[in-house]
Amino acid sequence: MGFKIAVVGATGNVGREMLNILHERTFPADEVVPLASTRSAGRDAMYGEKTLKVKALDTFDFSTVDIALFSAGGDVSRKWGPVAAQAGCVVIDNSSAFRMDPDVPLVVPEVNPGDLAGYDQRNIIANPNCSTAQLVVALKPLHDRAKIKRVVVATYQSTSGGGREAMDELFIQTKGIYVNDQPSPREFPKQIAFNVIPEIDVFMDDGDTKEEWKMTAETKKILDPAIKLTATCVRVPTFVGHAEAVNIEFERPIDDDEARDILREAPGCMVVDKREPGGYITPVECVGEYATFISRIRVDPTVENGLNVWVVSDNLRKGAALNAVQIAETLVSRYLKKAA
Image (tube, rainbow, N blue to C red):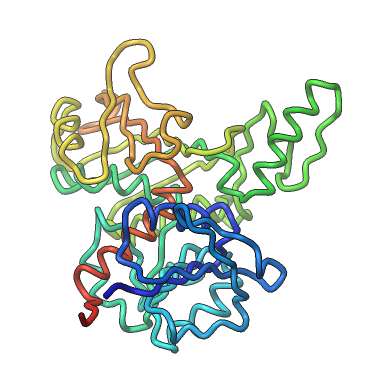
């Protein structure tokens, strides 16, 4: 006997990917229920070759399912996540609503699966920000070996991180430029086509954006509160796939050859690092893949015990849907046993 799973936000980019990945990984589900707003109720959602009908979130009885994967934004999660949790359903939430709650585990299964032990305090588990998820997958095995002191990261984040409307804006602006139609920004603060924008989420009092703050706070919660991290998060004109240029300073010596060997054996990591033209992975190549790809591993001679790495991942997968499904898989294997 399997589990009953609900996917909240099933008509969005990440919700659709959740349905795809649940099917691809043959998650032990007897029933999968796609949920969305009332206006989307009745629409079709694909689960493998099956066509499922989307149900309305606001009338759904969460006591009828075991796990709910939420990906409909923070407001929806804050309203309906506790409702589902109190009904006995375990919530795995992709928004930022609960990430920094001390009673809610913030989990990347390759990094801190043991934190799931506290899931039943709130019956809610948080999925980290997309840029954080791929970063900590790459950092964890290196931290275990040489202990990270400080990280400096610059991100190159695709428009899909801003949702379907953001992707549409990139497409429309790019097409318009070729016919001399001046782009009009709506989803972004400035033109995104043929441009880069160093602003993701709102600005905070110290000058960081909230996206940059999230990377710092979430890395500390997931990996180690002693790690110092500073980030510059940039939106770039690609559709899917986030890339990060990461500079790492360690307490203990580690060179590029050892780092490469460690990362090759690390869960969730795929090293593609040839010192020749094209011997690295770009966002286009990571689309549809599960792995976090690591390239350009090299010593930073400007600091003691320093390395530079290039980290790329499909943000709709490892940065969101895949990580949520992996959390559900770990939860099922360790904690949620179904009677036969």
